[in-house]
Length: 364
Image (cartoon, rainbow, N blue to C red; front, top):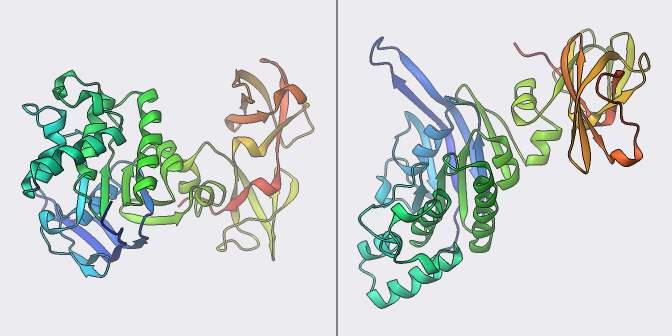
C-alpha cells in the first residue's frame, strides 16, 4: 500500500444522546481517551450497549462527538464528513451491491476516484488475490457464501488504501468455522499491509486472537486498555475478568498488603503476587481463578470440596466441571496423560495456584 499508516487519537470524547420519549440525556460514551498507533490493530470489546460501536462511528464520522476531539495522525477530523476522512469501514451486513459482480463491487471506490480502467483491473485482481477470490471475479454476490461476501467487503475497503480500517462486528453473521478462518485472514492481511485498524466485537475470542491491544468498555466507559495477555492475566476489575474469559471468583478477606497481598480464603492463608492497588487490610476481596490456575485434589485436601459432574477431553487438556456449594467451577487439567484424572461422579477438592490468580475488589 502506498499510504503510510496513521495513528488514531481520541481526546476526552463524549457522546450524549437525548431520549426522544423522556427528553433526558443518555451518555453513550464517557471520556474516551486512547491512541491507536500506526499499524496497530486495536479491538473495542464489551457487552451490547457499552458504547463500542458509537465510538467506532465517531472515528468514521457517522456520529459527531458531544465534546472532545478525534484525530487521524495530526489532523483534527472531529467534524469532517465520512467521505473526507482517510478511513474505510467494513460493516456487519457486508453492504455489497447486488447488481454488481465481485470485480465491480471491489472496483467501485476506484472508479469514483476516476482511476484509469487498466490500473483498476490490475489493482482489483491483486486485491482479490489477496483475499483468495481472484477466480470468482465475475460471480454475483448472491452466489457467494457468507465468508466469501465478507472477503469481498474487506477487499473493497482495503483497495482504496485508507490510513485507517474500521471493522464493525464483521464476522457476527458467519458460522463458527468461518469466523475462525476469517479472523486469521483479517489478521494476516492487516499485518501484511501495515494498516491501522479499529475492530468492534463482543466476542472475547475474536478480540484475544486478533488484537495488538484490547480496549474493554462497560456502560460507556473504558475500564481497561492492554494487550490480550494483560487483560486476561491481569484484569483491572471483576467485570473485566469475567468478560474476557472463563473464571471462578473465590470470596476472601485481605489480611495484609505490602509487595504482595495476603488473603484468607475459607480459613486458609495465601500470598498473591498480583492484586488491585485499591485493596487494603480488612477489605473483602475476590480471588480471580482462571480454569488453568485451579487444581483438583482428593477430598479434604483443597479449599472447596465438590464432585466432578462432567469431563470434556480436548486432547492437550481435560476440562473438569465440578459441582460445589459455590456453584459449578471449571478446572482445566493440562497434560492429562501425566496427571491424576478424577472420573465423573468422584468427590474432589478444588485449590488454586496463587501465582496464577489475582485479588480484586468485589463488584459494586
